[in-house]
Length: 192
Image 1 (cartoon, helix red, strand yellow):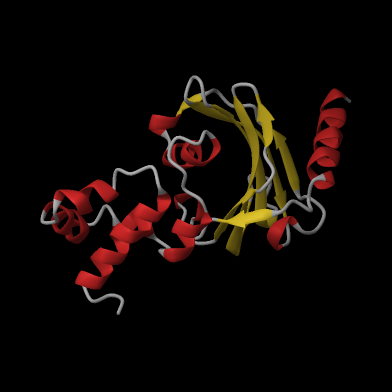
Image 2 (spheres, rainbow, N blue to C red):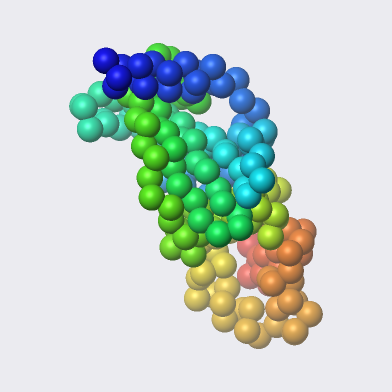
């Protein structure tokens, strides 16, 4: 009975918040070939925030119960003081963008994971904790930028640039990162 009450409470909480204003983070590593979104209105905490993530998959997947789902919503708690994150809940839906009656819900308070060990949490730390702001404009301007800046071509190009251009990559201003990638793509004739 306790399990049913917990799941029912979780479903009411999650479905009650299904009309979130989502920010699309195209090219984010969590997208797994689909689309990754974060809630535009996180719950602020004295040490960080709780933030909903939504993963919209391109093809339905089967969960551990053999039920198909096309999207999943996860509530994640971010601790900006101790630089760590943990998932609190996961709900899977048969339709895109969390539509339809949930096919599964897990109250899955996980162990705390340091931001440094999780590339998704590390990127979200920058957004949630405000240390280096990575918002939608970088993902919109250059989908796949996280993969691009790790390529041999980009790294070699960066080494050959002036210290002023190299400094753009270490700036906390997202517009500087966009500018640097624009310079790279211009030099590679990837954009005109």
